[in-house]
Image (tube, rainbow, N blue to C red; front, side, top):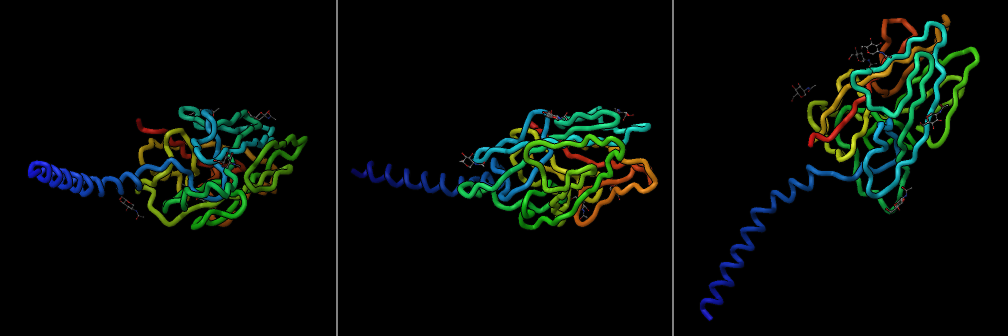
Amino acid sequence: MELCLFQLLTNSVIILLVIIVSLPDASKVATSISNLWPSGTYGLPRSMLGCPQSHDFEWKTGWRYQDTEDSYPNNRYSNISFHMDTMIWKNNLNKTFCIKGKNISEEKGGAWPKGQFCIYKKGDCPKQLSEGFIYWDDEDSNNRNSIEGTLPDGIYNHDTKIFFCCRTDGNKSDPIILPVNKPFYLLAYGSSECQQVKGALVTEEFIQYDTEDDSSNKDAWGGTHPNVSHEVPGSSTLVITYCYYDSKS
Ligand SMILES: *[C@@H]1O[C@H](CO)[C@@H](O)[C@H](O)[C@H]1NC(C)=O
Ligand SMILES: *[C@@H]1O[C@H](CO)[C@@H](O)[C@H](O)[C@H]1NC(C)=O
Ligand SMILES: *[C@@H]1O[C@H](CO)[C@@H](O)[C@H](O)[C@H]1NC(C)=O
Ligand SMILES: *[C@@H]1O[C@H](CO)[C@@H](O)[C@H](O)[C@H]1NC(C)=O
Ligand SMILES: *[C@@H]1O[C@H](CO)[C@@H](O)[C@H](O)[C@H]1NC(C)=O
């Protein structure tokens, strides 16, 4: 009987110890691993391996074929490292998107973490992200722009205007938590440097778009938008940085 009581006591002590020891760990685990994409509706560039991981919703996809400058065409990309599901020729390109829709039963992903990055806009920007755009002045003569499927918010005619949502209030060096089990893309904000993501290796990749060469090139950007620059100041070539994330393990 006494032995029993003793055992019961030590057992409870052990259980109590286990609880005490594991409590801080459990809360750490809860904040350092995420397998859910943040709530809301938005899009990401599609990687060659497909859309990012998702447990509780399905990514919709779409593509935009962009007929860029034909004379002395000069589209380029970071061919040393390039993982985007995008075909790039000197004078045209065709890029694909992964679009997250709203799923009432699923919105458990929480807010986008504090950082400096951009994503494509689809509907309202998620909380804490603000809106902007980039306008590509595509080829004027015999323009063959086309689209199919679900695309980011934008205007897709003989030119291309795409809207973005960016979070700007963090520090790129502070890793944010996102689902890293499958590769994905974000866009760089403010400079060509990419936001760090916990557990992921990030690679800066770029696309150089050779836009319309006439003297009234209408390339433009406004609001809160991804990093974009002219290859040479005043030139009709836009360079945009895409951040590729691949799991470290
Ligand atoms: C919404 O969630 C359900 C259950 O997880 C899933 O079967 C469905 O495909 C989702 N719908 C969309 C539009 O992602
Ligand atoms: C491949 O990369 C090199 C070095 O950055 C660059 O000079 C060249 O233009 C790139 N080619 C294409 C097709 O983008
Ligand atoms: C663009 O790429 C998509 C996906 O690879 C493909 O299905 C589509 O036919 C391409 N569009 C054009 C005009 O090449
Ligand atoms: C961002 O964080 C890094 C490393 O912690 C620090 O060196 C840098 O000064 C910070 N930048 C800003 C703008 O706060
Ligand atoms: C883009 O990044 C470059 C270099 O990182 C910087 O010089 C330029 O001002 C940035 N442009 C915009 C519009 O963010």
